[in-house]
Amino acid sequence: MPNILKTKIKRVTKAVFPVAGMGTRFLPATKSIPKEIMTLVDRPLIQYAIDEARAAGIKEFIFVTARGKSALEDYFDHSPELESALRRSGKEDLLEILRDTNMDSGAIAYVRQNRALGLGHAVWCAKRLIGNEPFAVLLPDDVIAAEKPCLQQMIEAYEQTGGCMVAAMEVPPNKTSSYGVLDVADDMGSILQVRGMVEKPKVEDAPSNLAVIGRYILTPKVMMNLNRMKQGAGGEIQLTDAIAEECKTPGNVFGFRFRGQRYDCGSKAGFLQATVAFGLSRPDLREEFSAYLNDMVALQKAAQ
Ligand code: UTP
Image (cartoon, rainbow, N blue to C red; front, side):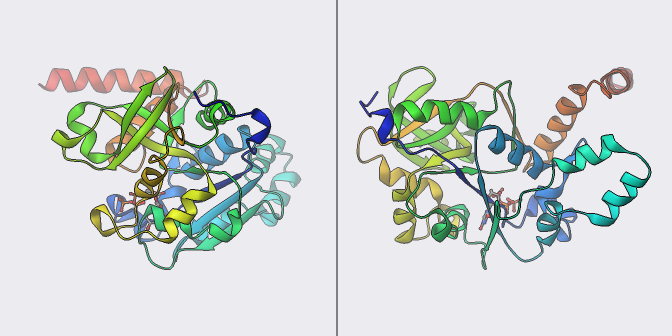
């Protein structure tokens, strides 16, 4: 672990939410609905990411959006007609739920990515708003169920290490080609010192089975690296490549094995799994929903 004095490490108060992707895996739904507005039980995906960031002490929320994403911007605004109708009918509980969706004036900023040139390019679009500060990046389609929110776990670990930190999880070796994969120099338990990162390696070339998922704490140096980036794997500007640049200096990049369950809500199977898990975790739904699931499983078995 590098010997960085705590006083030298700047607090992370800004977070970037790249939401400019086309969401092609959810067509036709995403033809008119942003993927991030799709609903897990009764809240859009983006709300889970915002709540996680708030719990970790984030104060400034920067969305990288694109054409067709205006529903996202409206979601965080006040809704005067709806609010006064609920107030008139005394529905205080629903008003309270709505309050959680409002963001303070000035806390939220939107920048536009004109062309979907990849995650690295989307993060780079927030460059002027980030300035010379460390910042978090949260991909809303990775939803993480955890006792202590994942970003909070990471910020606590980052306060010991400084540098860049990426959330990592073990995946089956034959799945490594779907992820950015860590080359680990030193495995210190929950914190891993990283000497390299490869985006979507061939299974036989993967340096480990530790995959990077959608939570990052990054230094402004990564923005500078993105400035000079060429298109990488898949013709996109890869965030992984810009972080991998930082790995050249030992002690600059860390992986973090978070405690929690990650759901890939960018894929249909992952979204369905998350729906089942979050549905079953809700006290108001659990009984009826689990009875239904049991019946379904029994019916499936009988039909086989
Ligand atoms: P994905 O790889 O899931 O791409 O992006 P996508 O376009 O959202 O979905 P598919 O693969 O076509 O179904 C991961 C994250 O990066 C953002 C996405 O919005 C998502 O949050 N992203 C991706 C951008 O903001 N801009 C891009 O150019 C690409």
